[in-house]
Image (tube, rainbow, N blue to C red; front, side):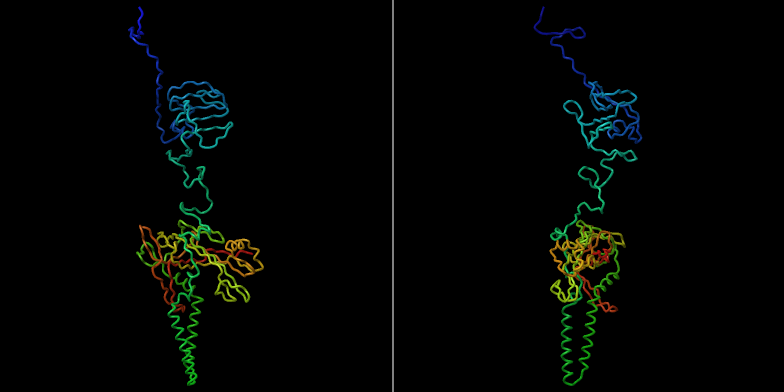
Length: 479
């Protein structure tokens, strides 16, 4: 007798209503193989070693989980694959045995990433791969350094340190290293950069400028009165004694002034050299000190205008002209038969100095418009006259960049600089700000005092005193 309700018989003989259940596919099972103790040897770590393309001990490949055979593909490579899930094994052309792999080449394929919609692992390449009968390796876990430390530890990132180029390789540099935030300034950007202090000729030492004007005019007035009185007495009583005394005193004072004008700069550099050095470790807040040490560039290195010397903290380029009887004057105060300054470029920025005495490093605040008194020796770079002016194209180019003419003039170019690694002496006031040791300009000018033995009158030094002896070591360029 038939029934409207379908029924079926179970395996134990009972009849139940309903349709029989459809057989379900067996869920793939995961199995793991215990790994022996490696002792820090990456070659014995199994799957971990395959991720780094390091050959393992033995050629037997381990597979976790059931493996289903797939249709064979034709190709010229034989390969062994290691999978972490249910993946299809691909049999390349060539015989594969338990003892090894035969073929024209071997392809090792490591899959530890996501799968695509067909169930195959996504292929990632970290660079160009060559074809032909060479071994190929595909990595799916990103670029890793195949060279490991001898300890067996795996570290992230490349072993080499330093900046990388666009392709991810370490950048190669053949010059001195620059800090991350540092930049080299061109002549155009120096003018508008607030971090650069621009110095003029007024910042240079001059005895006439440093001598007090009130005392100078007082001495002149006394001598004028002495000459008038001596002349009056000589004419009235015919006694020349007063006039002779005034003339002798005037000659003595004029000699002292001339001596200080000619040798005043050398006397000051000698004073700086004889001034005792101070240890930064024991220096107190607000103390006026002299520190000698090695220079290190700050965030804004300079470049010398003419010779293009990189990584400088101070640059000075001076162009002088000789004025004959009918020659043009280099400046309004240029006298005949003398050298006159026609152009001056002098710049300085903040830098670091490492103290010789204590080894500490201090930041010297010479940038951002600080008051500076430089005593940096310059060397003659080029001597030009009308007969050899065409034999120095670099000098002609330098003049053209500054719109300076070179029409039948006798010129001399001097350049001085303080580059990184030079030895300098700095005089200033110690200041500490947030555990940063700095040398800043003093609030008032510093007097050198009277040097009686050398017949040198006192001189005033304003701001930070910067002294460097003949750093350029430049010979005259043959022209």
